[in-house]
Structures are given as C-alpha cells and as structure tokens.
Image 1 (spheres, rainbow, N blue to C red):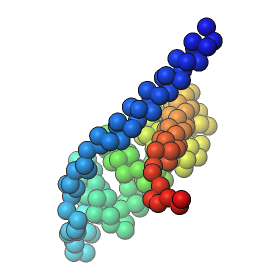
Image 2: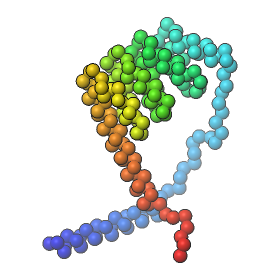
Image 3: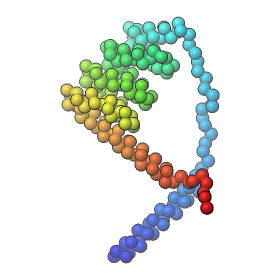
Length: 193
C-alpha cells in the first residue's frame, strides 16, 4: 500500500510539473494599455478652489459631498483638512458614509488616517461603516488604525473590528504567499554555466 501510495504521489508531482510547463508555454501576449501614457491634469483657478471649499458647507447634503469628492479627486492640498472637518461636524450620516466609501476606494495612508477620524463618531452606524471600510485595506498599517474600534464601548463595533483585523491578516498572508509563488516561478534573467 505504501509503495503504491508513494508511486501515486510521484505521478501526481510529474503531472503538476507538466501542467505548469504547459501553462507557461501557452501564456498569451499582454494586452495593450488602455490608458494613454500621458495624463492631462486640469488646473483650476484659486477662485474655483475657494468656491469648492466653501460648497462643502452648503445647506444641501448632495452638494457638500460632491464638492468634497471633487476636491479629493483634484488632490487639493486642503482636501484632507476639509474631509476631516466634514467627518467631525457633518450632521447627515449618509454623507459621512459616502465620504468613508470614497476614502476606502483610494487605499492610501492618508485615506486610512482620515477614516480613523470616523471611528471617533458618536453614531454607531458610522463607526461600523468605518471599521468595515478599514477592513478592506490589505496592509499592516490598517491594524493599528482599528485600535480605537477594538476598545469601543459598543460590543458590535468591537466584534466588527476583530473580524476586520482577521480579514486584514488573511489578506496580508495571502499576498505574501502569492509573492512567494511568483518568486518561485520567475525565470532568472541570465545563467552562469
């Protein structure tokens, strides 16, 4: 039985090696890039930027969010301060959730830092939404960002934060495993014989 089992394992290894070689041989050519190589950035005047900044305090919640989103997309230097102020002082939970969603798409350290401000919110739903958004980040900086949520007085926020930490941990481990697999499959640039 053991001899047959070891022969079967050896046969399976050979089949895996052959299938890997076939996959490498059949790789298609990479497609052409969709984006043009040059990106054109539109410059706005200072008056327009001041108007956009003032619109973040408009009476209409849709206008407030749209102006904050545009400032964020334009990478205005005052955008982080404006968004932080909105997360602290905004009265509409829907606007705060939209801001958190917008920040979560970016996956940068700045957006992560701004989302930690939402963890200070008095509304439980906003804190839960922020924890869920931070849980989508796959980097080690996201775990310390959840410290405030891990010590929250609401047990559901704490539970969601624990789940988010576990998700981040799994994503980091999966990313490391993928990098190791890529390193194993890479061919050397040159060989010394």
